[in-house]
Image 1 (tube, rainbow, N blue to C red):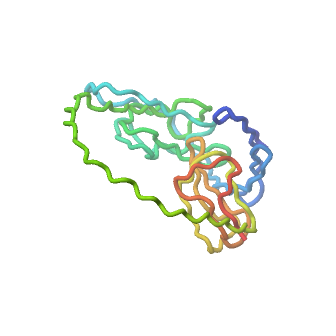
Image 2 (cartoon, helix red, strand yellow; image 1 turned 120 degrees about the horizontal axis):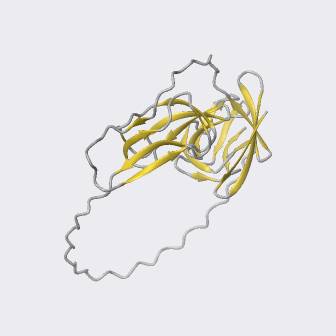
Image 3 (cartoon, rainbow, N blue to C red; image 1 turned 90 degrees about the vertical axis):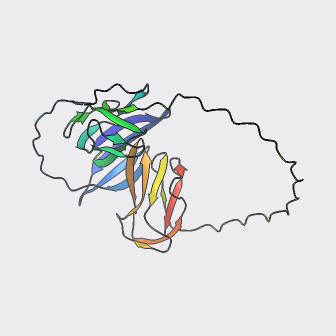
Amino acid sequence: MKEFKFEIDGRAYQASVEELEDNMAKVVVNGKAFQVKLPQEEAPVARPSRPQVQSQATAPKTAGGVFTVKSPLPGSIVKVVVAAGQAVKKGDLLLTMESMKMENNVVSEVDGTVKALLVEAGRNVMQDDKLVEIETVAAASTPAAAPAPKTEAPKAAPKAEAPKAAPKAEAPVSGLKVTSPLPGSVIKVLVSEGQAVKKGDTLLTLESMKMENAIMADADGVVKKIAVAAGQNVMQDDLLVVIG
């Protein structure tokens, strides 16, 4: 069993990973247990060591800045999908790393150009190790002409709104409640209410600690309620899905 300790926004977390059978593992975060489906392990392939790839751009750029992408957790680099000199947008995939027996996508947080790749596939990294440097471009400095002031027409008096009916309280939904293991943001919901699911099926994708994580069903059943939507921020233990 492997144990990990880390902090997010000043809050301490303790996680342990225990391998089970059939590519499943038991992950315990702050005393709460989760069943996690692991990828099929492949025989390790020896990879020659490669030097760090520096940016090939030689022409000076307008004053901007260099954004450094760091490793959120200890792990191993599985694949690097960008190259030095390549333009990237916020949210583009930079590389894939394996941490705690799970593959996680590391994405760009800014628009810019890859200045340097500081790791390669097969490299082991520690938390906060530098992975990629991205050169951002500063906005144009030419001041825009000030618009001429507009004369506003007199506004009509606001209309009195009719009183709104009080919202109805939702009836509680019984069943197996799937909650968020960590604070994060919902990227994509992959199921719909009324859909039948099997144990291990992916219900939604959650971004946490700059990594994408698959949230899976803990049992067979039918999706009775979806409590979140794509783009929604959640905290640890927030309700995600109810399976009946």
